[in-house]
Length: 531
Figure 1 (cartoon, helix red, strand yellow):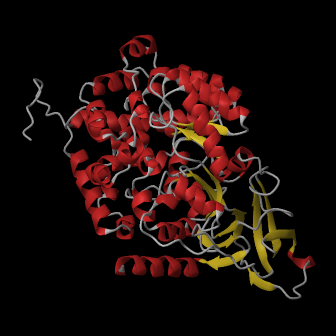
Figure 2 (spheres, helix red, strand yellow; figure 1 turned 90 degrees about the vertical axis):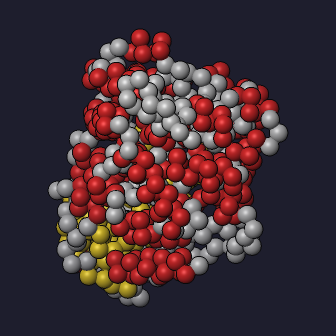
Figure 3 (cartoon, helix red, strand yellow; figure 1 turned 30 degrees about the vertical axis):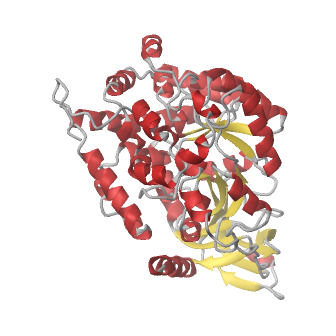
């Protein structure tokens, strides 16, 4: 189709976001919403034979000597320590001189540093076609726990039956949501209550909301809490971040995903609110169309929108860019501090996924062109990424500059939120078809936001443990804790980069060296390429 240039010389990139959504039944606002509603998951599960129930062998007793144990709870370091593990639990952390080795595998830690295992609190890895390969890469990064941010019915069923591909070579599953709350399943207050009840019955640990009408949003928050579930996710365009926090919305992902956060933190927010389009990208009427959700997740939609999923910003309307620019131009640190204080007061936890936001708003960064991660992807997904990146590079310079500032302001905002006491957790929104959505990148970008090395360590250990209500058994290397920890070659309190200087990982008591982890990744990659 020939595109007619705009009067200012800018060629529109295609239909507006809202038009695109209505035409093909897809929401680019989701940052993974499509995959979460079905998409790759359905194509992966459909036609497969039912997998065997997963089993994990009990780890042998293990003792690691001569290590420095870092405790993120208080920032202390204890040198020349021994960590004793039995049955997947830490039995003792004591002076190396006071230990015995009867019936225990003994490993010399060689002066390395020990920290709790990392937790990726926003991943969609179980929906990926190459999920086992990608989980092996996550473990190689030191991730021993993960929060799966979408669990369509088929995935929840497999979890209930113990048929997920989990084990000693994968991070442990900390929590999983049900299907995303959207107009398909929640067009009314009555329907959203029914959907929350249904998901709870299926075993969902929390509710993830993407977009609903304003009255449905507040009803969903209230009802989820009455059912003993936390609820969070994205922000519908009609809900401001402070409204969500005051209503008890438990957590925000990607800073909310919509432009609401920039309106909220703008000195010109009253005028911007008046101009902003607060209607749903997906019409609420879809909740009354038979099989709308199945159509949304169909193979046709999958193929039509694969590249849009990799970078939702490409479907922004030309008309929306000046509003974004104005909001960023008028970013007010005082208003940002007020928002951070509101998050802290209300206990609204944040998983900003800066590594994901960077792949969207700085997709033209040179390191993404031939990033090593691309070797992990199937040929079709690699092609989709390069097509998407080319489309981003072809955007007018002024628009790309606006997107660069979006990311840079997001980094600044995360630092402000942290200083005001908002709880920040690590999450990558991957792994998937974009390179750079990994824990080392997330650590680096949180450090760029101003978090100290200790605060970055806490964001991936003690803060997730507190969020999940499991501080008694995770988030520290101590007696009675789960034996999930990482051995590092360099001091993690000196630099956040040192969190990636991994020597070995202990996962549910299983000791795995970097060489063993790399061997597993290589084997699974070779198998994927051969299939």
